[in-house]
Every structure is written in C-alpha cells, then in structure tokens.
Image (cartoon, rainbow, N blue to C red; front, side, top):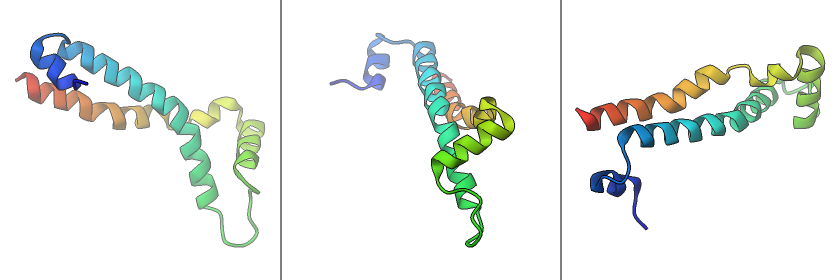
Length: 96
C-alpha cells in the first residue's frame, strides 16, 4: 500500500487535496475528542476529597444541565487549530 507522499510524488494527489483531507479528518477527530478532553479535565481537577462528580456520565449531565449541550464543545476552535496548523506548515514547507 502506498503512502500519501508517494501519491503526491507521482502526481495522483495535489497538496491542496492532502491539506483538505487532513484538515477535515482533524476537525472530525476534534469533534469527538473535545468533549472527551473536557470530561477528562473536569475529573482530573477535582480535589481528592469531596468529589464534585461521580464519573464521566455525571460530568456530562452536569455540564448539559448547567450550561447546555454546546458547553461540551468549549475549546473546540483552539484544539482544531492546534491539530490542523502543523499540517498547514508542513505542506507549505514542502511546496517552497
């Protein structure tokens, strides 16, 4: 099986196509990873005693109840840039 780089070198795929494919994949990944990361952080920052949450499902219920479902995606844009920006610069360095 050939890698993307081999396809690009042969001319089967253009850099723009690779960039868009990577960006779309990264964004979809962040769509799933952002709520999971938020839940993980909320659980990790609890004090050792007098826990605020009983588990991951309790975190989701509390966030949705207090702030709405959109609050699960707080931080989505910065995470998307964090994962997509290196790909952008990698492509630029290969083009020039």
